[in-house]
Image (cartoon, rainbow, N blue to C red; front, side, top):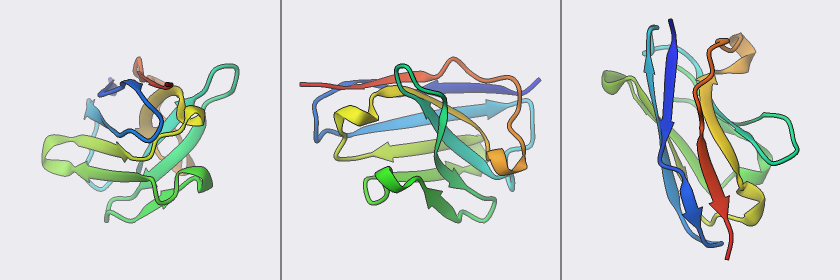
Length: 117
């Protein structure tokens, strides 16, 4: 069974930074297109960033230039470096396969990011 374990969230002031991690188990990680998603209060889960098996990345417009997605295939781990955080980035962040290829049904617990002064 595929498992995702997200970590690294927390409370941060506007303009601050956080790095999220996602450890993946139960499936082949290397070469698989992966993604970060987030669910803001009162909203549906939305795509934030993607990274394919070659390391090519893509970002949702509002996070371009502030967030960086990366992966370490040897550790089956994906990261999301978030800089210049804004209150509108407040959400629970999740990782899964890139939705273009179909997400796995077993979502992790996510990690809460709260941006507030």
